[in-house]
Length: 266
Image (cartoon, rainbow, N blue to C red):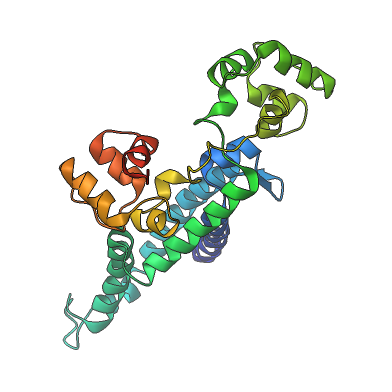
């Protein structure tokens, strides 16, 4: 059983590591669903599900592994007198390494910040590559609803879809239409629109707005950093350049787009 435990722990670790790397580089959820993103035949949701189940598998066999190796594990934290010591160098170093990564993630200091920034850079790439939905979970909207919400002529949209050989029912969601025609929801939406329209956000609004920091928006020429901090200060919010728009919006009880409209350059 010890051999099975060790091998199972190793396999679950490899699977969890692989899915963890994939989840590190995948597009943001709304973009993955909108573009029907897949890698090696699996969607973001499927990678997430495998990651979760392999985590439980790894936990189970990790506990078994600890059980079978309890004595040698305890010996690592015993001093020369064979007494358990919580001040042993090895224990403190191991604990410190893990605390460093936890605190680094919470307080965003280097080199952890660079890891998170690199991930955000990848997600920004996907946003530019695939475009963003007009609103959250737009792929779950019925054809008639999204046409009304986005001021698209429904009858013309249906003609556009039919002219491209897209089969659909008016009560279908964009996701239903996409799946039945083997295309992405974003493609359905693109076909629906008049040729003069496009899928971009209104001019001047950055992609992935919620994940942008005040400093990033300043560097992009979208806001004046000093003035923006003053504006937020007038709203009883002490902001700093590294605060993300989503974080500021949550604290003010607003949407990210509302915060941007509040602080953008006129």
